[in-house]
Amino acid sequence: MNFRIPILKLRDTLIVSIQWELDDQTALQFQEDLLTKLHETSARGVVIDLTSIDFIDSFIAKVLGDVISMSSLMGARVVITGIQPAVAITLIELGIRLEDVMTALDLENGLDKLQLELEA
Amino acid sequence: MSDQSSVEILTEWDIVAARQLGRNVAKELGFGTVDQARITTAISELARNIYLYAGKGRIEIQQLTENGMKGILIIAADSGPGIPDIRKVMEDGFTTSGGLGAGLPGVKRLMDDFKIETILGEGTDIRATKWLR
Image (cartoon, rainbow over all chains, first blue to last red; front, side, top):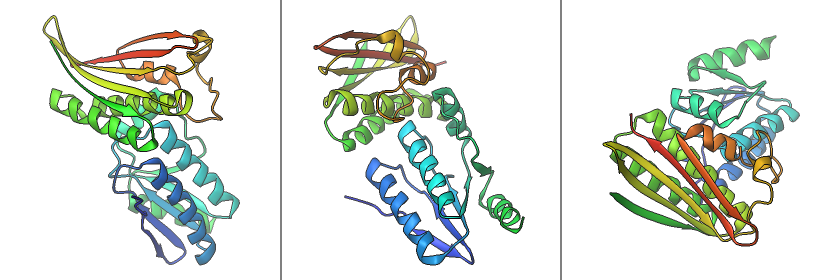
């Protein structure tokens, strides 16, 4: 059974809130859905909010890192928001560095950051 | 002295089942949110290794009581090909699956104790423990 993660459009930005634990298929489906939506809407920015996510393993981290690179190939910037303390700690202990990834504390800060980036 | 439950790892979905089981046990034992995340992540990595490298195996979760301390033991056992060079897989950054999996050094850092036994052609048995502080 596959869930699809809803992708909302607000002006020139796509907003995604990941609300439940990601299995491999859902994560890969999300990758494809986000890129398709970017293509359809010509959005220039994406905010992926992870507030509800309480752990990220290396697979999910790789899917996220990949989707950020892929979006960048298509000309869009991605901000990751709402990474919980426990997630930040385990990611670093696990040895995963999400380098060159734009992050912000929450959705509001993420949208501000993206706006600045897109105007620059 | 120990209470156990296990999940057979055959498909990607079993990885989800294994980490959910581990998280529930960790929560019951009274681990905080950071340790719950560490335990859940460690199980996810170990289960994925089984799925990727051995094809099938088993994740067992045991509750431990030892010298008045409580803890959780994760056993990842498979009868896959075994690991030819343990020293190498315990090096940071080493992976044979094209960047998938942070590997065993990451799991070791997330947990308190980490033991690995592997026999070529027979399989691998990994035991990782986290103690409740």
